[in-house]
Length: 374
Ligand code: SF4
Image (cartoon, rainbow, N blue to C red; front, top):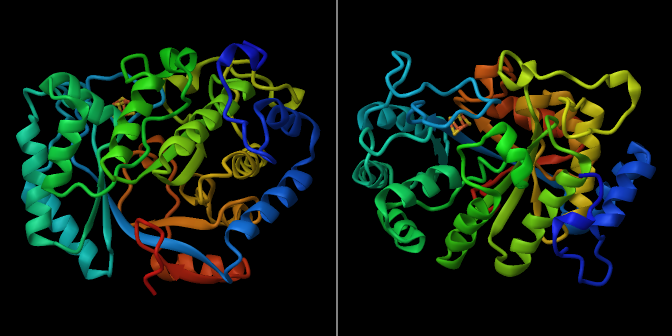
């Protein structure tokens, strides 16, 4: 698919808002410097304050057992694989204890698509209650849409009832994982057993309807075209117009090392060609900053954009603050999914503060709703 005409209705109905066609034109015709200038200006309008934010959290991957076979993932263990694990409540509790000890305020919990015979709904509800009982101040940001969609299918519970039960047990917000590219042509190629783009959006729509805030993400630089990246932006913008429930947008480039997707034939990076949707088109730091800037310009209704230093490193993370990002994401005590592909950038709280200061801003610790804590 080369044009934007086949991708359905656009959300460009507000005065001053850029359309998908204009976004494509900006991508093709503007230099990275000009895109950065425009995105920085848009970011300054939304965030004129003298600081840039960060959070302190801990990723807890409660299980790596997964029935899905996403070709970009090295983290999963199929059912029956001896490498498969499920953490006990006690093991998870010890991780949260360590998080609380360093002043952490939130935990991001995600796992694979675990068979219902291994982990039923009661296990998830019990885990949430266990954390809420023992660490009532820790914010639980957990279970991405593919995990929730799978539970919805396996329990037969209506999505809203399922989310209400999770919320009542302690789930505060939902991470935007599993979005990859919200275009089914791409999803069929890289994550064919995962929920569709519509289903991902339906989980988020329903969560927003019960007052649960969520983030949105994008993993790009694989088998998608630029038009499909823009369609992804547009689907997020449309839902945000409808619900206002997204707190932030986070994008990062696909990390190919030792993944099955990383072995797909690649386009020639020196040719200067656009991604064609068939060959692997890895995103460089230049491409990352360009897409970040475009995201800032397109997603005029999403307040916060994170810099992805986990995949790009702290120096590109600093540059990202000049290309539309206003937040450095989280000091992650633990990160297993990206690091399983061989990418291992790490920062502690003092380092993340220094990285922000060196870029010319004060730093401010925030909560999951982007309220300033200190
Ligand atoms: S990305 Fe998630 S759903 Fe896909 S294989 Fe890995 S663990 Fe499973």
